[in-house]
Length: 607
Image 1: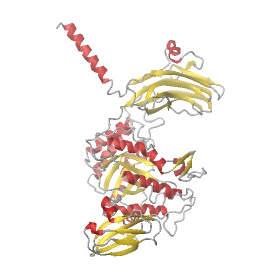
Image 2 (image 1 turned 135 degrees about the horizontal axis):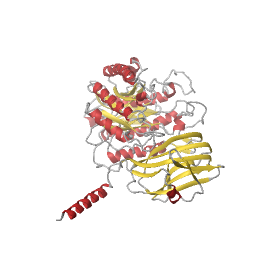
Image 3 (image 1 turned 180 degrees about the vertical axis):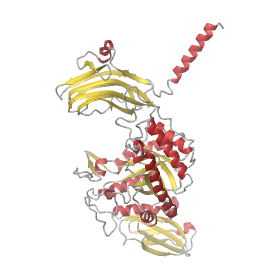
Image 4 (image 1 turned 30 degrees about the vertical axis):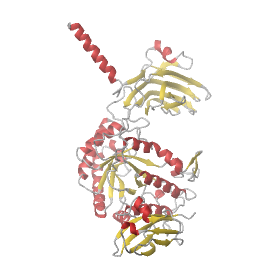
């Protein structure tokens, strides 16, 4: 074959390979860029200059939108190619400037992608822009293009707002690849540990040994979640004193590890304030990776530590994770890529302890996190549950509407079914990828009206238990606004003489952490103890367990004995429970030598 044809054939082959790869890695591909320097093409791209004018931009030319009334529509659009965008995360960025911008509602100053979905409805991916007067600054946001999007256009300008709004350097770039396909549904979800972890968040630099001993021996919690340095170090990774602060905080954490080693509590340790600034620079991210390698090396052989929680509530909205000045700084990793890097760095020194990856931007959905390589063991995905936020955080910083649960919150009704719908994307992610889920924090302010906090916590825990998600309540003897030990009075410091129903609720579930008490009634248990729930009478058939004689006891959530009856050979033991009020109780069947043969939960419900 002549050299020319061989050379041509090679070029064709390379081109074909490049075309075939378009469906694969698109990372950092530029989808759209407009710097407004070519004035001859501006009107072709954006239409005639009726709603805008070409003016001095951040660098060279830009567009200026001038609105004299808030009842206006000075916006223009241009189509965006959908090639290889569905399912990918993109970064939208722009340089912006404002003068006397007012209004700003629905949607105000516009930098947005308007997406048409397969159902014919519109979806908006929008960069938020503030009102007022400000000099040139970067603005941007990372968004995931949903699977049902069929077409998109980039829409810019001013809508229902007034003032002057300048735009320059519009840029769209692929930031993350789409999620992988679902795993085989037959794969067993490996929780990394037997049973359930039910525990509390504690503040690492204020909790005492007596508190932890009480939490373990009296409350029966089996785990704590604590942050190295707590939340006290704003922009921790950017502090010049980071290394000295970290070392001092690790000495304190060593003490907690020793306490928990002695009392049997398992620890999930993480970084909160000391993880802030995570998306500021490559230097900050490198420091973070090296910090976690050091932490893992420090605790690799400490059995009390069961998990590493990489970053508390990582935030990359607003100007993060990039400065959004074109060209984007691609050295700074998005959270999925950074989490992957962190996991591999930790696994290089600790091959086994669980690693917890939290959702981004307070989301109840981890769908923007690409699952870590399934060959890497013990990776857990986590969210914090405070939704609906206006209910859970009402009147913390001042007067707000008094919301009850169940009830209406900002025009929407919330109950247990609503909470399940909110958590459905998380459940779907778990089912799709067969990965364990951990609720690292959940709570509601103690002074919500009508005993609402109890109702909310009860429904949350029942959902977590149904899904077999480990959970940690926020918080134990930290700020008393979250305390289940305090009264329901607004900032009332009173500790009631009797335990609150919120405390009894948590204790009733922690009691299930005791060895031998199952999470749910198994088929065997339901045959031994019935009916369950019960109203007036409950029956026990210990013959199924092969027992000939012994005792059955019923205790309340505090472990206080309420009823006891002797078991007779080959007889079903019936117990009158009309003297007991509604609630959660625990039964124990023991043989004549006092050895427990079966323990379980009994629900008494008479209404």
